Length: 423
Image (tube, rainbow, N blue to C red; front, side, top):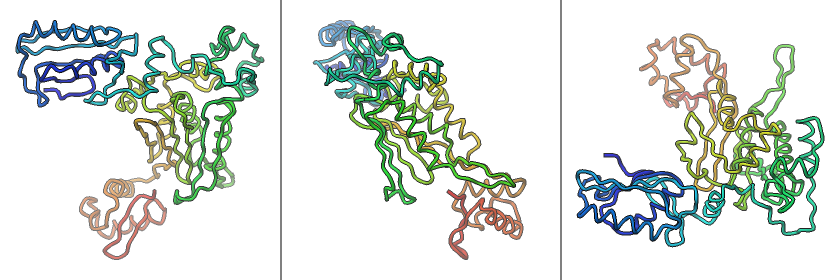
């Protein structure tokens, strides 16, 4: 018997609490409610199922506003199945409240999600609605936008025609929220950069990027990056610039954070830098209709939370293809032992980019022993002997060689000696 989940709920009784789940399915995604099944999956059936279906239908029509699309079916064991389709006229409310599914439970949406449901019901996103300018006499300027437009197309933008074409301005209502974001006076929260020391306890520097175009915010953050993660190395007779963390991966993560963040939350994008990693945290959880499994899957499903902003970035060349960001970042780490870490929380999404750690160029028994240490670390030489199949003398020689090449590290002494891969 399938357990209850985001799209399936069981009801042993006929109380009106199921109407919250009807609201959730209509708002966010098609799902089923099965009446006459207990929480442990036991089929107990429903008395007078035909009459019950009629009563349930009347309850939905009388209590869910606007009325959702749904259908009933009755099984041989008198179990009633109610299937509710996701609707377009959001929000679908029960007693003036809208609901969503949280795994196998149903919860009320917060004020920001409610506003987004209202916008979705009018086929809009936050970036598309008119900007509520608190100072009507303020004139927006677009020097940063003009530079990027000129670099991309080789010509200067024309006002207001270019802005109208990009759908960030109309003669009747002025600039949209997206237009305000692109201006040199962006009124929304920007980017907060914190640079930590090795211990991650001492803040070495803090930089707040705000009251400037989102394009300029990205440029300044990207310009700062090489100071923290680039170094010079001499290889043979050549001096080369080495990227501890790939700049292209950071830029892609940051652009994704700007494009997909929840702009209605009064909080900045946060960048945390330390000598070994950089983390980008974006305000707002996953977009409606996306689960953590969807987000982390190989397909990397992308749902546009800020459609207009994403399309402007696409036209300016900041984004190559919609939905390609995460695969691009992972490709930058294809040869690295350490991989990016994804952070998915209710009110934020983040990605940590670690320092690149290349697989050492080892052969034969050296590679075999390296892989065993990586698998069992921290591991003693005695423990390794049980799985390596090597003689004690041969293994000791290889361990000393790997340690000397700094491919592995050892801690402790005597019988307490352990081997592990350097972090």
